Length: 453
Image (tube, rainbow, N blue to C red; front, side, top):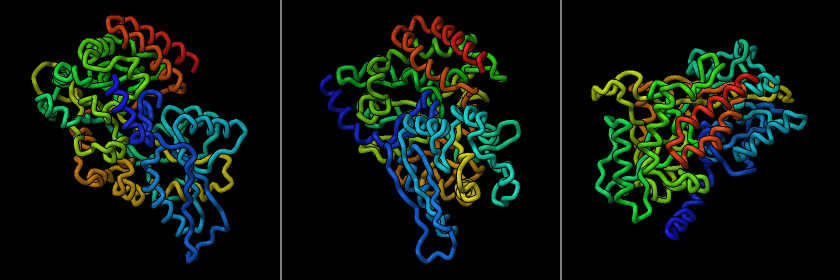
């Protein structure tokens, strides 16, 4: 235990700039995080001939890892327009607290990120600037050029309230040093979930005296965790019409029961993961492998032990038992943030102009080149793979060709039922034999929430 505490303390500073994802954040949450209240300003150079009339746009984001790249794009826009940009990096929890306070009578930022978990609430409350007229006049923006599912996230009744910022997929990260130490072969594209479980068990058995676990996945690791198993097994989290929970679907229960029986024995105890995020455990060298979202690449690339890390495609569920990955068997959840503006911004034209700069083909390519995130604009993400010298992150793009992408499920009150997953599933994580019953309880809870929408 003393070794564990020392390792965790050593890694704390490394991960502090990027809060981990999961159901509460996008994982399902959005798993991007940041430090609270860091402000930077992209100022128009003195020599610019543009007349910004002393205007400043306030822009809020929550991921410190993306700040530098986005600031470069904002700098170029400021040089052309003469409008200053003040970028604030705020922690995930504080971000939504402040945004809600602004929407309730305070002051909202001019431009900000929107997430699938919150979009319905803000769109239905008329708190976001309707972008339809701007898009119609903007030669740089054609919604057909973006991933359709992400465009749809931010569209309500035919009105577009945000432009797609990025898209993400899921892959497996593993620690080569741990695999080498315990004589376990590295993951490859032929791995099934049974192969994953077998490797995790070997690492746990061989590393038990060292306090090393094979894998880790907590109750709030939805998009970057157990959601992928549910859909890989043919289950669902929510019905297509968003009216009924899929947590009591037989295939969903089969997937979750498999998780409990085959992966839980190789994981840290749930109370330990509740106290210390699995990402931090991995970076501390006590977890051999885990699922991660592409939004976390920067965090692991800049980690102290990054030379030990490698990526592989997410495993597949060999449903028909033929020993090969067929269509629909390798599943990755995907999601995408949106750039939105306040409906009450003093500078709607300038706010949209900045959003357009971020979301245009040029801006999306630059975002990928700078290693900010994968692009929402189709065909612009290849450069993202080359942005991390010495680390092959191609599995995040390969899965788009070899796998099946499932859009992050969401409804009007996603944050409510996902938050209840985080606490409600604890009983099953602590007592795996109750998984089926707990899943049915989660379905009942979710159906109540959906009925209120």
